[in-house]
Image (cartoon, rainbow, N blue to C red; front, side):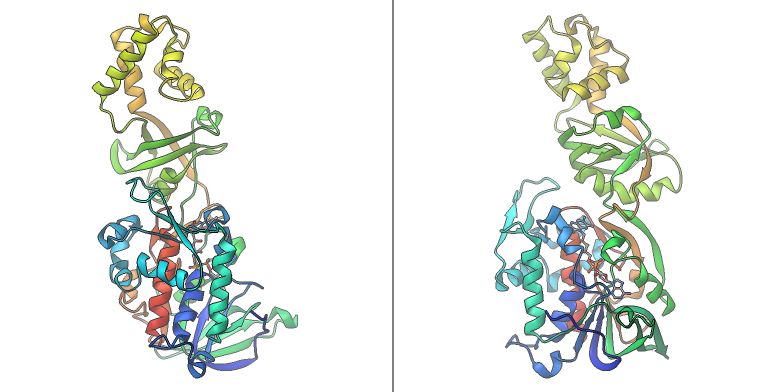
Length: 443
Ligand SMILES: Cc1cc2nc3c(=O)[nH]c(=O)nc-3n(C[C@H](O)[C@H](O)[C@H](O)COP(=O)(O)OP(=O)(O)OC[C@H]3O[C@@H](n4cnc5c(N)ncnc54)[C@H](O)[C@@H]3O)c2cc1C
């Protein structure tokens, strides 16, 4: 894709703001012919993609640790929408272009696809990746498609302002750093698609500009908060457990002793606190709750066993090793460093012989395996977050077209709207889907 300098002023059919996954998909769809016979040059020449960086989709290259978890193969759309905050808004969009269509789309572009952990029922099931495990392959395929459709891609083209006349955008104002003069150039299009991202990982280009743009045009912005981000906790012992990961843990988020949400999945202690998919998935809600008061997070390390079943298991191990210490016995259930901490929290001596533990103390140990708590202190900010909760109010967007209900020639796609997904490919899925819908609605 040739790097082009922004022209001073130009008329286009469609101008797409932001060259991330949502913007690229929107530009591809806006420039594709209705009946899939190859690009229609006349129409496509008139789609422009404006990207402020010198290359497209910087964030896409970071996804899935560079492997690009590009979708989630949950084909039941009722189940799919449960993986999003405000997911119902996407139901129609997914029925037009959902995970199946996304996988077909990439395979037709020549990207071989694989699905990891199909149907395990865990939160990390059905994650879709390129078989090459390489996000670059996904981006290269998209770039080729943009070229094939003759989309004009303008890099180093930062939109800094927007003008409107009545209920329509009349033009975009670009900063033009390549001239060094600070001179602005203008872009005029019949329709505009705003795909400038949210506020997560601003180093990749998404610094919240899109919200200001939409606000200026009369849109309401639901307060953006970091989502899919690790959580700092008060307890110093949690940080000492850095590196310990546990599978299939159940987490309850509590405020004023009331359970607010639950989540199950993989969990990780880190140098700052707690992380792993199960924590990332609750992080935005924890952030919202922290604005109102204290938040506790409780852990059930054996959600598939009830108290009696776990006690039975404990007694069984005890019988086999009746001279071992409480710590040794507990180590059959959890990693050693965690066993020490749990004994500490229970107020039990780790060196006491397990067989000598009173019934009350055995019960205590089982209780702690099913329910120990940490105190959430802070959700790490936008520099760490993988996505944004909040954004353009869904009340002001038509869910069938992604068109603004306030500005007649404006459409939205991607992270900028007030929908965010769990970890597992749901966020990119939302970008492809809304990009496709917005681009298609611009024809
Ligand atoms: C580390 C990390 C890992 C992730 N892993 C996954 C994963 O495996 N699976 C998954 O589903 N999701 C993942 N995500 C989330 C996913 O990357 C985002 O949901 C997705 O990139 C959002 O796409 P977008 O196009 O809406 O916005 P962005 O990707 O943020 O793109 C917006 C683009 O707009 C440009 N822009 C902004 N302002 C302007 C302006 N004024 N003028 C011109 N251009 C502008 C930006 O430079 C940027 O290129 C991950 C995120 C991170 C940070």
